[in-house]
Length: 440
Image 1: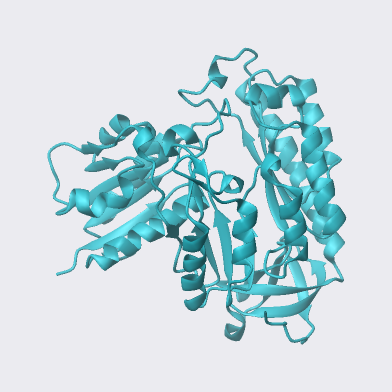
Image 2: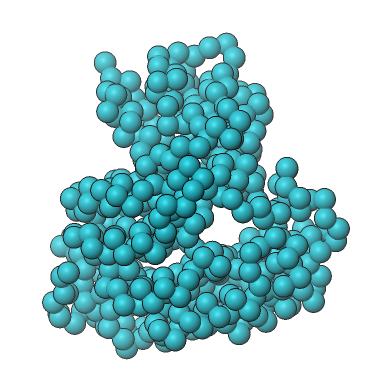
């Protein structure tokens, strides 16, 4: 009888790609992958340390798992498992905790998945997480997250990722292209390139052997993939050559997500970011000069220690003046083993939340303005198989969310449309232009 295994993922696209790959390892070893509620024999929970309340969320998921399958074996892995293995091992119901170096070997390490009296911890020091494990998500027919890079050599004062994932390391271009070809053969049309510091691609065994620019040049030749997106790239690594290449490519989409974190140079220095706001403004201007309808997303942290009301307003006004399309806003939250909590000028939770709300409202305005600029223009939309209330949704090349009446024929298909208006939910409506979508 096959043992059943279910997965739950917290956090980023990188975690999703890794969970998916670990799921395939289980299936190759003869396990049956099932849904969370299908009374599995084993639960694998992939955790995150970036979002707030990591401990609370982990406990809640373990509790829910026990409701659906009382005697299931529960294994916890991921960033939070690397940072706090002992804490997690003490959560009632947890049987094993695996760190960054061990997570891809969990089937070999745990073998029988027999419950013990006490949770076992398999977590080496983070310095041992020095190999790159190829991963990509699978099962969402329209889009796949492909991991090209892992870890980070930066030392931002608010971030635990280098402690949770280790030093920067990458796959080889040859391997990434091989994965892209496998994904293309499965019928997937869009690949999102993911990593902790994606633009730092090219480091193998601590040496730079390839570059991100070389990677995208090779991926652009992969037959069968209609679209590539770059999930997130640091402004100091977003070189002119990359922007110019995307502007001239038919496969790389006019869409960048560029972390800013603060629009105040004082705060950027306290954060130990590797650029100042002038460079960020320059990157946005360069993109928009070549791709006026390009979508640009921005990460921002508010309430960082030392951020006065004046510093926050400087950030607000800086972003307000930038030609960007949406924001991901994070109120600063303290992380153990980082430098920021020791800094002076702690900002109250109330002020952090108020500032975050102000920026979220600005984000809505930015997004609406971006959508309005695209009304009347023609794009291709890749439709997904998520159906809600008889409606289906998809994305244009420049990341405008389009809604249409459900038609099974449209799923995972590219349709040429003219954007017509924004509906009450803030989604774009469109009419088909019946123009043939050009194939590569």
